[in-house]
Image (tube, rainbow, N blue to C red; front, side, top):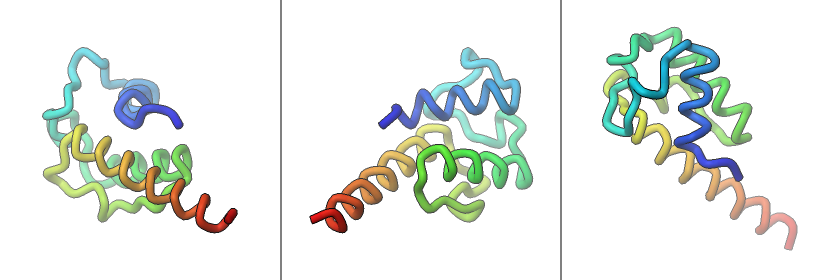
Amino acid sequence: MSDPYETLLDVLEGTFAIPRAEVDPSTKLTELGLESLARAELALILRDHFAVPLSEEDVPVDATVGDLAGLLSRRAAEAGAARRGEAG
């Protein structure tokens, strides 16, 4: 599995043209200029990349980059556990 924080930085840089140097885990998404529509787009991109349930509601207005990376880590771990449970 790819590192959620690094993937998030890749998406912010590649899709939203936000330089990595401007981002750290405590940076709020709104500080990066990601308002409602952009947060929804970000959620869709990350949902597809990680194959986890993720919606706009999971990316609240006060979310930080670290909050979102942590959520992605948890959701990816839960999805992996569920897949392993189905396989057994």
